[in-house]
Length: 87
Image 1 (cartoon, rainbow, N blue to C red):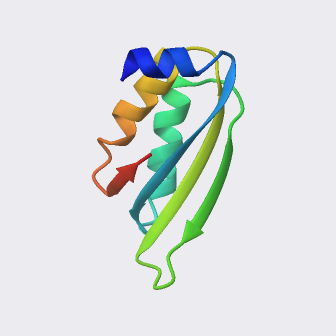
Image 2 (tube, rainbow, N blue to C red):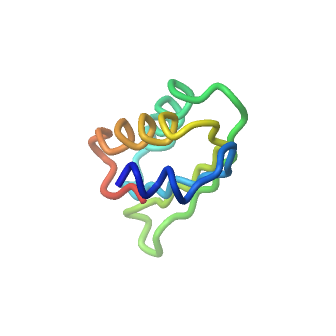
């Protein structure tokens, strides 16, 4: 996958992570901690709640400078216990 991703993205590039997790108070804080651990520049975040309020979808967009930033963020987002999917 890494080779295909590298070939399809020209850096710097905007990259959006779509994170779906349980609607708990610490979901957004945990996502922000992961992103700021591996990315020091400005980012944009949008949060959407499911119709019943059980899940939240968090879109966080960075201006990635290298594939390693994307991979490190992804690998750590999936480790958050209340996260169900990272796209």
